[in-house]
Amino acid sequence: MKDLPATSSVTKSQKENRQQTHIWLASDHAGFQLKSLLIEHLKAQDDFVVYDEGPLNNGRVDYPDYAWPLTLKVAESLKHKTQCFGILICGTGIGVSLVANQHPDIRAALAHNIFTAQMARLHNNAQVLCLGARVIGQDLALAMVDVFLNTKFEGGRHDTRLKLMNQYREQYEKS
Ligand code: RB5
Image (tube, rainbow, N blue to C red):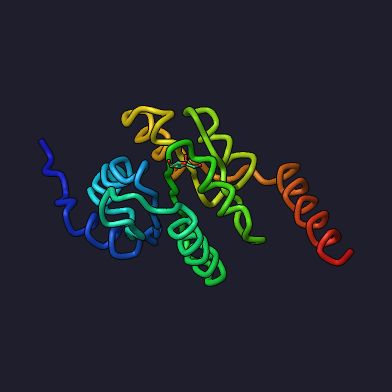
């Protein structure tokens, strides 16, 4: 039987050349535990550079104090064309999604299942995934994050709609 070439050096150089995805995570007290679990899950993979934007414990906090700084970081990183995403978690996911969507360059999607997590990327090109730690279970959250991070925007007619969204906002801001 022919000897197979050693694959370790190929794998190493592929890893060195591959662009890593930067992922920021933040929560409030309700989302703290799920955030910790997701960070552990993402850090275990070579593909991601993971940033924990707090809080550092499950003491009561106000979600805008964590969601907005994360939103700014993702928006800044997108300006530099870095491949990046944000993940925000609160009790329902509603509060953090409202905060992140205040930013004109950010589309934050509140998802409740695999389908909505996938569609948030496929049709809405969302850069931030919002989760409700009191709404979904941990296993589902992990699966939703995986599908969100691995789904590409479909573009085409969906891009037209995103452009329209921006045009309506800009028109309103000028009025
Ligand atoms: C905190 O109790 C809760 O209001 C918050 O986590 C979130 O659900 C808000 O939308």
